[in-house]
Image (cartoon, rainbow, N blue to C red; front, side, top):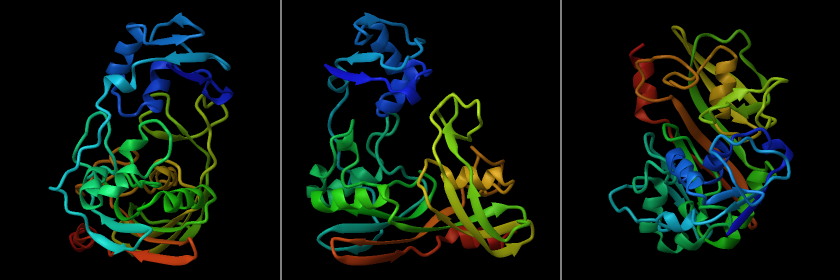
Length: 304
């Protein structure tokens, strides 16, 4: 049986929504079923899925991991575009339209499934967090429809060090985005805290009355080209919050083209956001990786 003690910033959440975040490989329906079946207790008492968590509540959870297939399935149908490989890391140019790791609604068609086919030893490289086996070697992620540079650790020592570099913000990241509209300020720093929406499906710019955990977020940007009513922007996120670049640009009135969550309908088939460069120093070696812009970026600008 697993125990979780609720922290101050987690109080106020529904228990089913909290567990959906904690156990992301489960659907919310599965979590609700487990709660109703008595597989989750709060302070040794059975609760409803709508129970509102309080600080210092003790959650007692059983049979979650046993009820799911605790196995990552190799997939040799996915072709990885490998930019670089040595004894410590493998770096790929991730294509748009593919998840980085499995979730409750996608089990086999992800980068992680392909990684263990190409590099079987990576399967055992991860931390001790929940469902860590689904993220072998993976210390950072790109959204499903974001393309570009993704670095993966090949051994545990490299994994631990690379994870620390991301945590300590010692990784230099550059993205390129095509945004709606023309920026009044051609470069600047967006400093707006971010929190999950009450549905937990996306992020929002945090307000004083925001109920979910508020996280600091900083994004620097520079416009490098303007065409018709679109801007090509270089983006340098200092922090690495979920959807940070997309929500920050949208908050300035310039959502990423094709972003249907934070933007609007577009002729683009996906959000035109690309991780172009990743720089860091790992275990005494300096790394600098570039991923060229994909064809859909160039095609979009050629047709507007």
